[in-house]
Every structure is written in C-alpha cells, then in structure tokens.
Image (cartoon, rainbow, N blue to C red; front, side, top):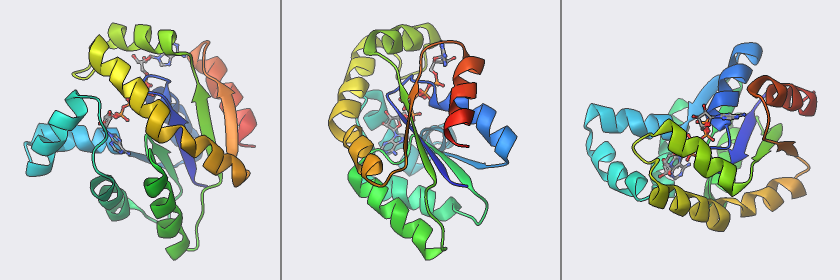
Length: 178
Ligand code: AP5
C-alpha cells in the first residue's frame, strides 16, 4: 500500500505518520526529514536547502524528486510532505508505475490556519517563527492545494478533519483507508 499525507504545515502529517507506519509496516518517506538530515550533515545540498526552508519556500522539484527516487523500494511507502507541486505528483506517479505500483490513498489533513500557527509556535522548530509559518501556509495554498483536485479526480482523496486528539484523528484515518 502507498499512502500520501497531504496537508498544510503543522497539520499533523509527521505525528500521524508515526502511527500508520508502525501499524502497516510502511516505509516512511518524509522529504522534510531528509532535507533536515542534509542540513545536519552540512552537505552542499543541505546548505542550499537551509536558506530556502528558513524562508518557508519550496526546495526545487528536481532535488526532492531525486531524493525520493533514490529511496523507493518494493515495500509500500507513506509519503509525508511529498508531493507538494503538480510536477512532483506527476513524477511520483511515473516512478511508481515503473515498478508496477501506484498511490492507493491520499489523506488530506484539513486544519484551519489559526490552529496551525498556534501548534507550530508551541513547537518552535528552526522554521517555526510567525513570518515563516505564514509564508509556508501561503506556499501551501498556492502550490500544494491544487493537488487536492488532482487526486480527487483520480478517486484517491480521503479528506480528514484534522482537529481533535491524536488518537481520534488516527482512528478517522484508519476508517478512511479501509
Ligand atoms: P516539512 O518538514 O514537510 O514541514 P511541513 O509540511 O511544514 O510540516 P511540519 O513538519 O511543520 O508539520 P506536520 O504536518 O508534519 O505536523 P506535525 O505532526 O509535525 O517541510 C519543511 C520544509 O522543507 C518546507 O517548508 C520546504 O522548504 C522543504 N520541503 C519539504 N518537502 C518538500 C517538497 N516535497 N518539495 C519542496 N520543498 C520541500 O505537527 C506539528 C505540531 O503540532 C507538533 O508540535 C505536534 O506535536 C502538534 N500536533 C500534531 N497533531 C496535533 C493535534 N491533533 N492536536 C494538537 N497538536 C498537534
């Protein structure tokens, strides 16, 4: 099974990924985590990505598609924070098709913007200051939201109300991917 977690920054993609990968034995592919690992390692890619991430903009499609392509395996995957643009979504479909695989479910975690800002200010990651958070939300609205219609047209979109307790939301997701 291949699942995408789609949602604004702070909507709970990482939190809910932990629950699902353990239960379904999926490979966790988070492009945000991969980029933060590059920054921690001080690689050239990491240095370039840091400035973009600190500004709340998107790293280039070629870089993130390359990171995903390197890690795809026959095991089902949970894609967390990828794809974020139409070009990434189309590339992912093509990569999976090469291995006779496809996306089964796209879980869209729907959370309102004020809740998102409050959650992230409480967390305080490097890119969790208010100006960057607002820009990340704006980038989500402009560049990632079109994927909702893309996957709805494929019959794969599962819309989940993303406010409430973590376990409660996990149960909604399980119900939606039965
Ligand atoms: P990424 O790491 O993907 O960050 P993000 O999408 O902004 O998402 P977050 O990790 O902030 O939030 P989340 O939805 O995982 O929520 P979480 O569970 O942590 O990307 C960072 C940057 O990398 C991007 O801005 C971009 O620059 C770059 N990048 C990454 N992927 C890219 C791509 N594909 N293309 C181009 N660039 C890319 O929860 C957030 C907080 O809320 C936590 O503190 C959590 O404890 C809390 N929380 C979770 N659930 C609940 C709940 N139900 N109730 C209350 N609090 C909750």
